[in-house]
Amino acid sequence: NRILQECIRLSNVPLLSSIVKSYKNVKPLKDYTILNIQHELGDVSAQVEALIVLGALPNNFYFLPPSYSHNKQFQLFLIKHFRIPKEKFLNYHPIVY
Image 1 (cartoon, helix red, strand yellow):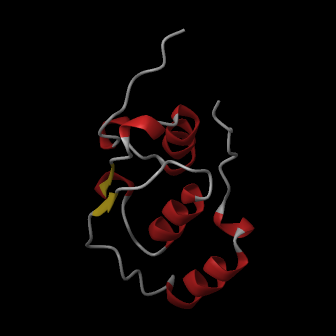
Image 2 (cartoon, rainbow, N blue to C red):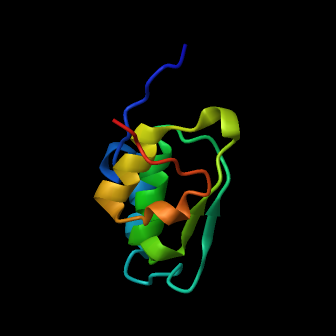
Image 3 (cartoon, rainbow, N blue to C red):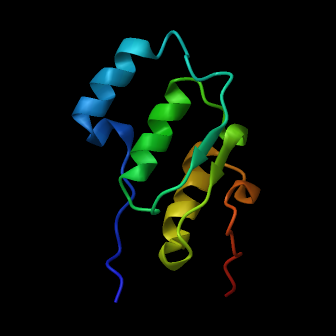
């Protein structure tokens, strides 16, 4: 059984927030492509938000989680809140109702 994890925002991670505040005006990631290879856990959404605040463009992200840890809730959260295109999830499967 999977344990559902709530996606969190950058404001919920004080240490990461304080680091991001130091560099957010510089936008050091504005010309970078981000390849995210890790489990789609709830706290990763705060990391993605931090990268965007630091200048990474939503269209410059790619997500490749392990096949056994696909998390639709995580993907939908990033699509909704950070405008990450669904095509950037390399294992994206549309939700069928």
